[in-house]
Image (cartoon, rainbow, N blue to C red; front, side, top):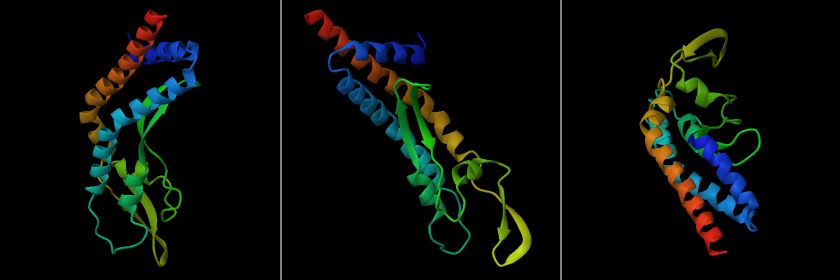
Length: 161
């Protein structure tokens, strides 16, 4: 069975339980916990990006790293678990920093103090993609295990009644 279909079936079973809300919270928490090591790998990958400029504030790499978090949704339009690099809204007017630093083409910006001078800057290409490649199998297994534990718990509860 595909994991997404299994997650949807598990969510329906949890809703049928009397304390379904608490069970959903616990499942989401366990799934987020299982994704934390993969998110840590992505954070260390962006922190490994080189920096040649002066120490300006706020620091771009650490701001991107703070915005990398596991996300779990049970129900609605999208059901699943993923690691997401959220936008960096107030970092040097560069809200798409996670996406642009991951891109091999880099990003263009004006040179400070020269209004007509544009440059292309390159980050660490595929830092997010490469860190997720190695973590995909481990993360999928951990999420599947969290789902299986919850399904076993519900089945055991139904056998007792």
